[in-house]
Length: 222
Image (cartoon, rainbow, N blue to C red; front, side, top):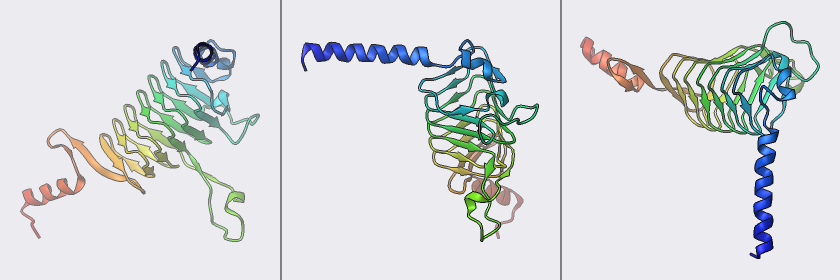
């Protein structure tokens, strides 16, 4: 590599670093004022993903949104979605690059929630009630989603409508999650299920191990 190429490379990298800093969306950016709430210290990294419905989106203090993360409220820009926020992301969260948060009714993400890249969270799904109509043309259904504070969602996890994840939970990479899950559990699989759960007496154990211990303590070995 010639000296000229090396100098050009350094210049390009410096310019790109400057563009990333300048292009990041913060509470002081003109676009930041469109949000219902964009807390102190929030940074939405550049390149910014598709974001619309900002008036119905709240992001808490010191949350980091990775590059190319899409966050949407409603079906598209310019729709009146009522007086309340639809997508609420807590404080001190970290949303991994390339993730999608798609809200139509209610998505609540608690404080200190971290995700890997390419996580998908939505409160809406298509239906297939009428077999004579293409699925994409049938009116979708909404069901609120909540993710408890302190939880971690691994790379590529999918959280479907109606899901309630408790506090301090771990969702394994690639899991497809639907349903209600208590605090302090590890969720994995397709469809996802609890594979570990914490209790002060036993620590982190698999559900089947806990059942065996309960059966053994009761004397039922049948």
